[in-house]
Image (cartoon, rainbow, N blue to C red; front, side):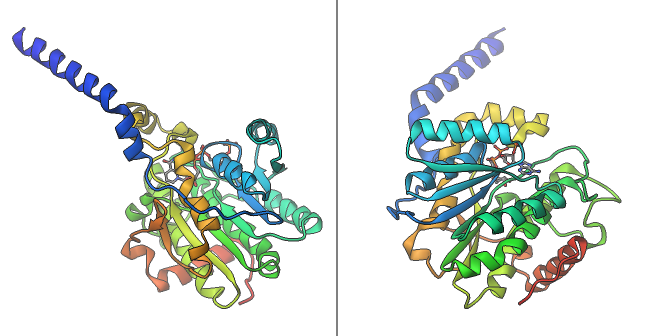
Length: 320
Ligand SMILES: NC(=O)c1ccc[n+]([C@@H]2O[C@H](COP(=O)([O-])OP(=O)(O)OC[C@H]3O[C@@H](n4cnc5c(N)ncnc54)[C@H](OP(=O)(O)O)[C@@H]3O)[C@@H](O)[C@H]2O)c1
């Protein structure tokens, strides 16, 4: 009985301390902030998965800086609701929604075709959309969903828009990866998880693919005035964990220690606008500062092999 009373009292003290220190914990968890005052008047930005979470906050910030922001969303209704809420915060926001399903290469191609027809410049591309730890699912083209959306979909989108980015240079590409890349490796023998599937490892693989893609693309774009950097946004309270009961539970339990989507957007914004990064390329950032890249994310050989495998799966050939 005495033990039970002590446990309850202990938990009560912990809860009280957490409530008392909540503002400080929140401030600490928020991480780095983008302090750049760069304006983006006359600039065009494209953000994938901009209807919620980190993508929506990135869209809001860049719209306030004066950019024309194109929000590429798979659900146009959700996208329009997000655009309306951005306009409620900043009435002059130049935001528009376009349909893009990264789990369907015909949707990506249709999106790019219309984009190239109607939009003359692209100064900032933010490959933000992502899916995490979903049950085994395939994209329309038969790719495992997490690699298909997080890596292959963005790989194809970037390929289709790279000419426009080069013509609009100086331009920047920001690839939203994750700390999870540290726990991933590229399973070349079973890239699409047809032999076996683990939702956590497939997510880590896709986020490692993001890091490798950013590095390899940066290498190939040297001298073009188009830079590419990858980002870990931090642990952010968002809809990302929707497919995993365990992750949803952990995120609810530790919500006090998580970043808000606005805080989570800071590093993407920093990489998109910071003056000091104008020529920095092929790097990885977290909390608006250079960040550690796992050894498997630094191997040029792996990056090239993944590049070739991805191009082959998508049936594309990049001009160098
Ligand atoms: N949250 C974190 O702690 C965390 C940590 C590290 C990295 N990240 C990365 O940050 C990025 C943004 O995540 P978030 O936390 O903001 O998650 P989120 O709130 O779930 O946002 C993800 C976005 O991606 C979109 N999306 C998913 N599948 C898509 C598809 N097939 N085609 C087009 N869009 C699609 C979603 O659209 P719907 O709303 O229609 O589903 C949503 O807009 C992701 O790349 C994620 O891996 C997040």
